[in-house]
Length: 282
Image (tube, rainbow, N blue to C red):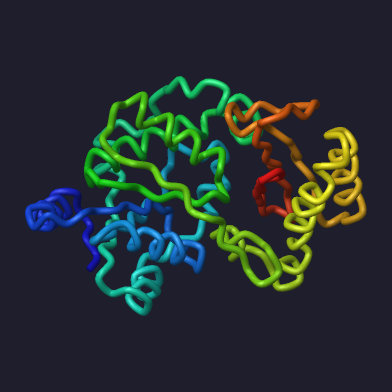
């Protein structure tokens, strides 16, 4: 079922909720792939009904070219979901449904969650993410919303968002879906050639190397190793590699006991920017 307006969606969901059924939301920007499908399947393990929103949010792009090139094909997305789970509700709102006549991001205090990594290199990005999700949560009023750990920094930001806005929705993180070579499933992968997809495996190899080294090497030694791995692959341009404590997402140079650590990476392969992350000590 494809629904284009928020009024129509709310009418359908009102009936579902009156039947006592739970509603899950999987927010996407389309170009759906197996990673999204894993999120949707995960959502069905928690909820009776799942809404998949498809909306390319203009306020979270700080690069106009990136927004322009972002893949869009709602018909293909709808057919993809129909083949796998025909009962999923697809919500494809217009910009006016989300932002009315004022397409701009709100400002949120996400604290240290947005000071580094994506927050540092994509200034304003998370305000755009928070703005669209706040509105989607208001429209759908889901019991739970599902986000992939591939965007772990975003996951932490969204959990903070619902506290700031006091919205009654539980945020659930889902394991990163990867292809057979470890590359995280992403809509941006559609922009890579077959040969570039092979090269892109370096990201997973680098994160796996960091995880393997973590117990017996210093953070500085790990960082040097990863930087050198990318220097050996000229097709890639490493933007950042950071090891952070999960509780605050602040890059650290010293390992502390009883802390969970995670490595984050962003790199350009040609014009395509890829990100990924991995838990290091659990």
